[in-house]
Image (cartoon, rainbow, N blue to C red; front, top):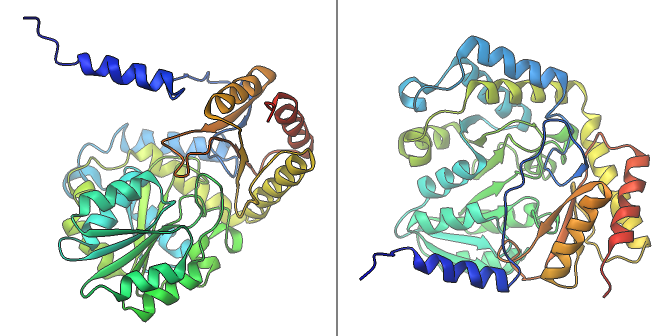
Length: 380
């Protein structure tokens, strides 16, 4: 008898191919060949000379890697500096930097809940939140998208520790969560509110301070936020922000912090460089929102179906999974890179193109991009 323990993978691959859901890696060159409307570089900072210089300087001073977990050798003075400046900028008491936004969500959800507690999660939340709920061992109730009353009713039915979790801006359609209403529901039921501000930082709020600040929730005793350094700040890594006692608790209990190597110094330096640049140039946040609005208006004027953007994500519906894949490929062939979102990345099963509004896009580039998306649009 032959030994073939992975033959089942071939059948899974066939199913993916039949459903049009095969994903492939496409290494990009160092010098951009396409107009980028696919990345999350909302403020156009990832190649900014100040940001790359800050990354290089950090690597030269602190080394290529963190050398260990944050509790062993992986914390540097640079990490502490970034944490202080992030907390101050976003309006929270303290911050904790981790190796990714994914790790930040896992850290917050697993450390702040547990057996016997309840997590109330929006149906549109990111996969990192879904996985954090699963790993937490808490009871998880998934409620309809952007429905504060459903959150309130679900929290009210539970006795014991509870937490509601939501994206601030949902990555698929780019719509914003009703944060003020969600916070009110949590306060009424003595529950914590966890906000994933990955797509809000740098775009929403005064000077890009984020969705919690825009909603007047930053620094609230019952509010914790997670974010990523890899979008508006053009670097890599994640962070949890909240009351100091919450951050101290994570340092002592969050497994994705305790057992993971610290964020590389170059990424810390780049994030600090971007954050300081954003402080000096707060208009970048408003420009990113303006670009998103321009894309939306021009796309819908051309007869395409798009969702009104609340931040920097512009979602354009496609008639099918196959059509979305072909549409994205045709856009690429015509000179622009766009995102292609299909199941299982989309909770409603509707495939889309996702366009990223960047603060550094010119009006001419916006018009050119819209013309290409319109010209390559599939029938139906």
